[in-house]
Image (cartoon, rainbow, N blue to C red; front, top):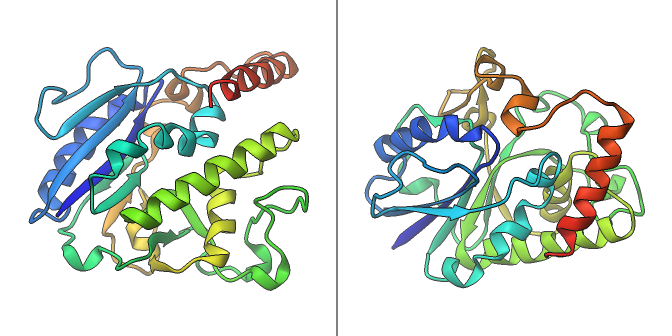
Length: 258
């Protein structure tokens, strides 16, 4: 059995990679072989010559391109991913703090994690996509739980079906001038409305410095302790509407490659 771990380290997000890798090797299902696929624009990354580290050169698509089009990025590796039994995506600022064993793995379904910011909120407070013209739109009758886009994975078949569908849906939305409010996360929450999944509690996305009534299994590091979001993304927030216009033009260019 083999596990593929997908990890995006664009802009300055490679600063998190070493700690993620070391914590995963120490704590995450040590009994099964894991290969790490690092999509990055960094010249060098920690352990890039290790047998289980696959450095994949990836252009920095900026914000929100890097998160919005992550499923398209993964889909470029579909034939490679077919070799694995399980596939998982983890946010760059994740760090494992406890041993996680094979019982973590879902059987013939997806795995997602309940959003730590909404576990104690009413369903009508969940930030689902509200635009009915978007393929990420969630109607009232579909609303059930809200998951965070920091972790998704599962059996090979289920994960590849996920990235195929969401890459297509996001591309379709964008061609119609629509970007869902929470980008890939909005589309993920729509997808699980009609698919089976294993729901992990918010302790698998425990925000650093918070206090929530769940045991911390995986910590989401506070990015602001490292640098501003603009620095991490490799962008500059100055310029207001001019910056937004450039982002729109850049995304159009990006979509021509998917």
